[in-house]
Image (tube, rainbow, N blue to C red; front, side):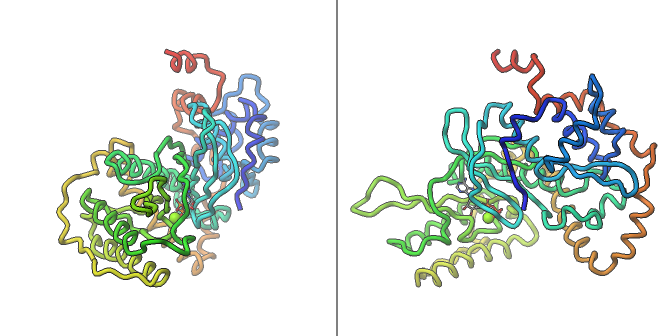
Length: 386
Ligand code: ADP
Ligand code: MG
């Protein structure tokens, strides 16, 4: 379980953040970032990288491996800190509270913004179960660039944020997206309950219809949720009464698996979403309605692709995300069969090779990343007040 102790955040020095960023950047080309590279990229004015590495290690923000050569990689908590610090720097976050959800591939925390409003942070944690075992990081073993779980989690967050923004902008009920950085998404807190927790409901057939209408509405925008079930629908009771009935709003969450209605398996995903609703309402509330929308009957009125792209998730990213996910899943399957082969690969690739760690990180790139998380650059403050 990834533990998040934000109190440490306040005590990390700028140097320590620079070292964290250096490791993050080094991970673009190395699974295990060699110490000299960390030192070079972090370019600490007064040196002493060891001391900072030791401290980060003690806080379990990074992982040390000395089997083949001395090197480091970021753990999820280290990645969390970089994202949190960036959110704070941007003025979107002032504190993190209790954990409110643990998904298979995410952790959800309550948080608050500078105005004291409650918000939510969702950290995407793809592959968290295999994150620590080197043998699963086959992309590295094959020498490919930037293909690791942190990268996939970042793409997943970016996808979620882009879709949430696009859907929210056309009036579909989602949390209000606030910000996205690395594998973290900030959104407002929905004061309601996930549908799976609701044991009783006044008009189940009405709510059921509402859910199906959302599926149809999404398809009119050219999209299919892909995981439209009682865990990803939040029920919010509205204050105003209509003839003594409390109106219920359904808020949709969890978007990393959304697909376009032009996807080759679109009908399958669409029908599955519809079926989920029929099944749940039937089982839980003994409710059924004679309404099973079909994708082929729905007129697409809008194309949200453009909005999604404008929010930073390009078609190329979408393709890459799908490809990498597929690869990782296949690799995990294979792993059981050919650990020996893996070991041989690893023996070859894990050796320290000076030419390999010639980083193609430019100074400018590093400064930009470091700037995002540290506060020692005067220019930013000027920009913000301007
Ligand atoms: P996962 O991808 O792990 O399924 P979800 O986005 O579905 O993550 O969130 C997991 C749980 O966290 C949800 O079932 C819900 O209870 C809670 N949650 C997520 N986002 C919010 C939010 N904006 N407001 C309130 N609760 C939320
Ligand atoms: Mg979910």
